[in-house]
Image (tube, rainbow, N blue to C red; front, side, top):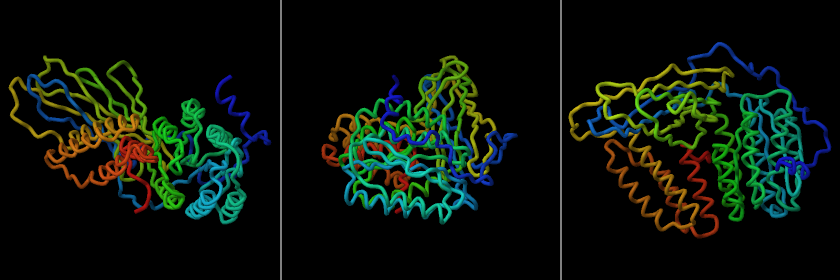
Length: 452
């Protein structure tokens, strides 16, 4: 018996089907838009660490960066959302936590429009669908608010059941809005759910659904939430106190409003040498042998950049100007509901028989190499729960950033400052959750969505 089959026994399933979602026909794009468009919001840029390499330099780092234009901020007309809020109503949520959650969620619902739909799912030891997908008209918001008001806290914590039921609401809907997301809020521990996460994330991927985790308080299962974020390639937010919920929910929605591209496929072909490694938190698959890869990026917000660092090994016989990489990008334009692509880009470099004088390395490649190491040190510290070595490593990486010509340290000061704050007292309750949150934000190259 599969783990998801066992989960179904902990789900309230009085209804044979959830195909009762309210439909907004005019907001739904074609499922297979044709032909491919070339004027969307994304662009791609390729860079190598140096432009000219000497006779002994054959280990090469290259950077492929997918960038989203910020020119449409705020957008003239945003895409429509399908949202499922999966809410912990176990006994530990009783009191202030539950009341603040109700208030925060109702305030967040007011940010939505009549093009959006919301479903509420609650879970304790069992999961229950509180509402179908409701259109967020004034009446729809009233119905959703009434369902939230009825929530009460009691019983244990079955995170897997809540996630599975939330996904089922989406799987059985009759029609789909442009952007689909599921928000999980929990303050509890549920060790058995860890084994079910890969299967649940796979089902979410099949449904083109982004998963977002919010862990409340020092006692929530930080390891499970970080694992969910890593598998789903989405941020994980640590809510230190119930009062953090209101700004975080609003920030979460503000981020979804800014999504401009989904199902991004960055296709990279190595034209010279061998591909030694691909450094990215996003899903990587090999196609057509070891020299071709596809990097899958779930979504990109306006103004964001998603970078992939590649390590290449070229033969000693290489000489002159050579093509290193080709890049092609396909994606769904979230605001226009159509399939788009970026014209193929080529990365070239020159190789000389003579030793090259000292060159300044490419700024962006150098910084990404340093931040890659920072993420590795953070992971080790988070896994071990020890901060002493990480503090020293962070100081060393900051010094490296200072030595990079042209690097504006203030550009990374916020990230590094938040990481240092998370490192303080790593052995104390809640500190590992904060570090895990910052690790995912750094890896996914996404800043906090909490408004300043």
